Image (tube, rainbow, N blue to C red; front, side):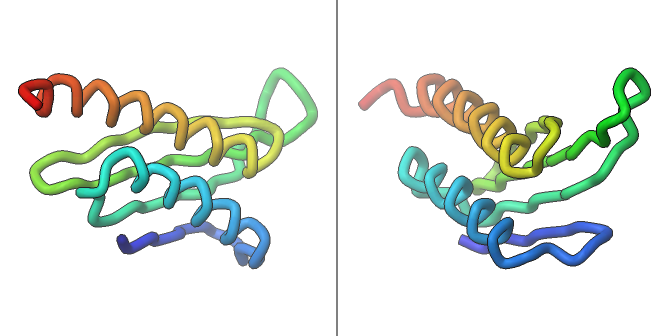
Length: 101
């Protein structure tokens, strides 16, 4: 599986390893994943003084793409949140398309 990380800043090795770990866990649930694209963004939160760490996750399988977005005060939490949302979509997709097994 190809993992692409896109950000407007330099992504450190620790964050890369967190991203790869979370995305590779998705592969355990659905082995047909061909590619995962992660977009890391820093947004301004107007209600608080802390900045929002925004993660968009796009996971591709043959003929379909899953997408989720999450934001938190850290990228680690945002990556975990987006990966969890994609996992729920994968489980729903598999139950609809592979329920005949």
